[in-house]
Length: 188
Image (cartoon, rainbow, N blue to C red):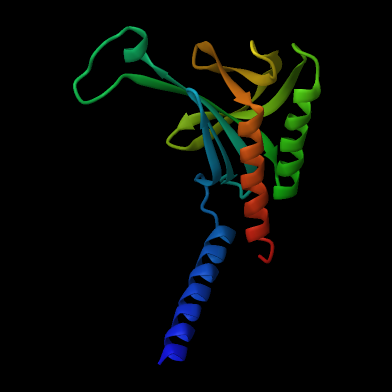
């Protein structure tokens, strides 16, 4: 009886893994498939894959800043809040290996002098988790008050410039998440 139960559990696990593998291969168009996400202060980051209408696949890193209007103006709202999210998505590459290489390039920026500036390819977010037109994001290496550095990203959101800050530990976490996903999907 125990052997039958063990075999049944093994079969269910194998079928479940095959289902996830098959669904990862057939990523729907115009829909984000998140790999890993992290939050830091009011900044939100995620690495995801996205397939365009023409079938082109890409890896992206979402850079989002959540601006809570009710906290700034001390407005109390019953059962809700007024918030606005500015978001742009860095293009990391067409494959997981290219995406990992891009994250390693970002990591190397922490070794650069403060105020080092680079322009990176990105796409605008159109809302509803869809990506829009190509754009560029300005990344500036900033020195922290108590030591260390962060990457500050400036991008156009609507009619204003938004910024988000990425700490080294958060980038390491995102990179590790991508590496784990690559290992998990190695045999696809």
